[in-house]
Length: 318
Image (cartoon, rainbow, N blue to C red; front, side, top):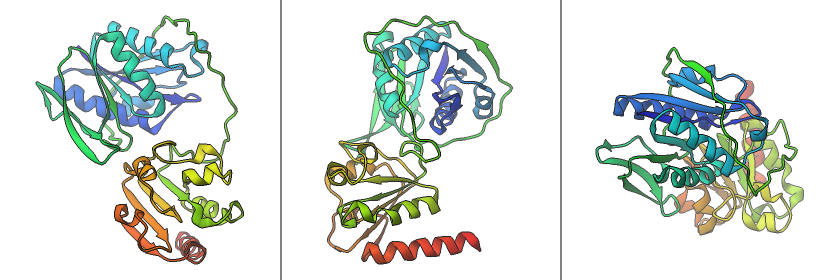
């Protein structure tokens, strides 16, 4: 018996979520009195995972897996899980992870729980805590099947160093044919993406038009943050749909989320509830977002944001 962790990577480098799930898997393995095995696909160097507790790394290299395909990736994870006699499989709860996890569960006839926020409170019965109702509540879920697939929510467990003398072995995985063909697209480089951002600066119709987004981008640059927007803004074409945050857009689980000129519709709040600290800037003191915020500034964004940028620049220069 072992715990298998799928350590996802992008362009050969591990994502922060990969290090988080390895940290999580190491703790679960300790609870079960077994070892943790990390699976990598087309990662250039797996030794970084030893720092977070991966005693063994199974490395799969295959050109057919260069572009993400849920069915193919799930088949590889399943094959490695069987080869390593893994009964617990851990993935992240990113968009890719949410696609892969249920397919792995079907392949292994396993129970599957996503958005898990903590290590099991009990291993007999196997009980995990997860976010529910659009991140507004928690539930404790028992997984009674022999195999268990766990999706760890981003930023919920954290990255914990646990240095071990790990080893890596190559694995020749069987790549299944898929009716779905994936195509690689060009990515903008040099910008922080919403998925990877520790800080997100988001704005809504309170900005009054796309010509006013310069100060949002400047604030994001000062903070090393990603930019985002509300649904109406992307629908109006002020910002690309890739920046749309919310229940119908991309979920955000950043450490800091700054909302400028966003009223706080239920659908938007559902997408950002997992963020740890929420700051709202709005002229309307009755805006619903203030009820969900940790800090709120009632004021005109065109006055508040430039002053905030000025203060942050002065702080960084001091």
